[in-house]
Image 1: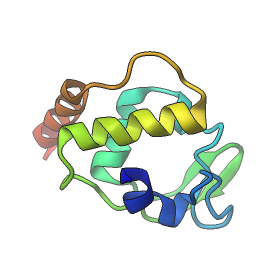
Image 2 (image 1 turned 30 degrees about the horizontal axis):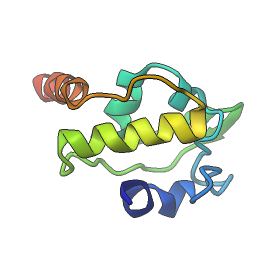
Image 3 (image 1 turned 120 degrees about the vertical axis):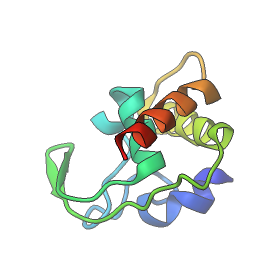
Length: 107
């Protein structure tokens, strides 16, 4: 439900993005890489040019700070499992809190 509500509009239900403005999540190093970087992007959004799977994208991803730590942990766990093939322990709310606190310290 969280993915459908907050992510699928841009990244599509299948995680393939629109291959023009919004990058795919499937097999993306942004999904399979450092979980704290992904948590930071989901929490704080992203603006500016990035490269995903060898292609450049330059659009704005909105911040989702309004979601609580459990919701962010759930949606990022879902994204990593479904689109990145990452099995194992789910991301915990305390991981999200740590990333949230670090980003607040930078302000």
